[in-house]
Image: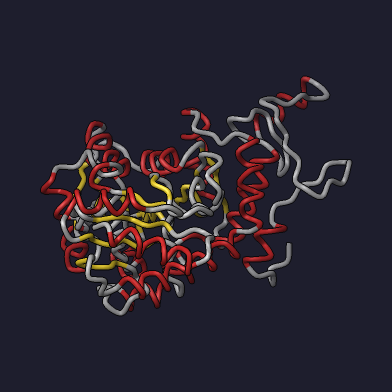
Length: 393
């Protein structure tokens, strides 16, 4: 693979391993184990794996390795380890670098399951956690201490779409030697500059845009080769959160169209957000591409594009939001995002229902908030669908 190739080309050709048959489409090596020519060869592999050698699917597999190498090539990271789900990736990324007595500083605005790991699981193992407003650099500066081991953030938060300044926070963290861990799902690999901005560990839920068609669960953790192979890999090898070969093949197929899909979805999302802003049924429209977004400048500098997701607040609260959701004809009600189909979610009663009312209010998750993941339908059809549904509010 040439260093001169663009990310779109790498998304089609990166990591390919052809068998002796010379297949065009990547092969699925649907096997959990591998055989050896001799006992000596088996012993040698368990001591040290060569560049393209495998011993067990929980440790690695040729199809999975194709996925890992392709995603690393798109992201600009040295290496990648694929996981069974996005949350397996979040858990592994944090648990592999933190131990009892360590201090973690995390943005408060996180997906519900991420917040559960940070607030509930890590403290059980003796990790001290400080939560901050992710958009407030002074709060980060005050919270990061000389003994801070890591910082964690969603680069664009779910579902209120706060944009965190990765470059500035990375500088603060690196001053004390802390590892910068970014959940980069909403930025997507298409708009990511996380490595360049200073992130040490980058996490994706491949379930979202990388698959892009709602077929399979998957995740990935990216970083330096030393981190992935010496810190992350031992944790995942022994705890078992590996991606299956079939899932890796599905994700490889998804990556071939990732750039095209995400750019088309982003264009449509921007158009819908601009059209909905000021709608009489809405109290606010949240989209990083709008000038009204508090971190619009950060998003423009950090990502270039503004993502495939927007949120809006329906006047009248939950009851009115439910009327809107139930009146939609094209947009489906579900809790995934990044799909080819447009999906609407009511976070307060689904993805973030575990949180207290006070915490939801603090995170901007009001009773009327609806998160809309824009798919590949015609933007004019989606806008007409939303107009009809908002009339029901």
